[in-house]
Amino acid sequence: MDLSNLKPAAGSVKNNNKRVGRGQGSGKGGTSTRGHKGAKSRSGYSRKIGFEGGQMPLQRRVPKFGFKNINRKEYQGINLDTLQKLVDEGKIKDTVDLDVILATRLAGKNDLVKILGRGELKAKLKVSAHKFTATAKAAIEAAGGEAVTL
Image (cartoon, rainbow, N blue to C red):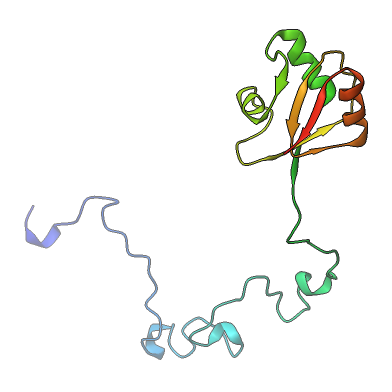
């Protein structure tokens, strides 16, 4: 072994980069492997998101429709059968307000609560919520309870 036959370890040196644009003799001069003409051959090219080669893009072909009301209020609905189930389990006694609803995880702290009329209510409850459906209010009052709108 001497300086004339020294080699780096196998696999340690890797240079597969093609040096482009360095003259015709290299075989990769001229167009620098970019082909002739077109956007991709030019400097500064960057494809827009959704670009389909000049064909009308999907997001422009599909029509716009609908309406999004920016003033819409979303309510977290709670049905009467859910309240009755909690009464049966002993989790609520005689009043249902936002603190009880939070504690039983029926709604989050920033949610607006609406009592809905599915199921039947046998227990006499004083229910406080932001909104009531007509059937829910009637059912609560029929059971001897009270519906308080916040």
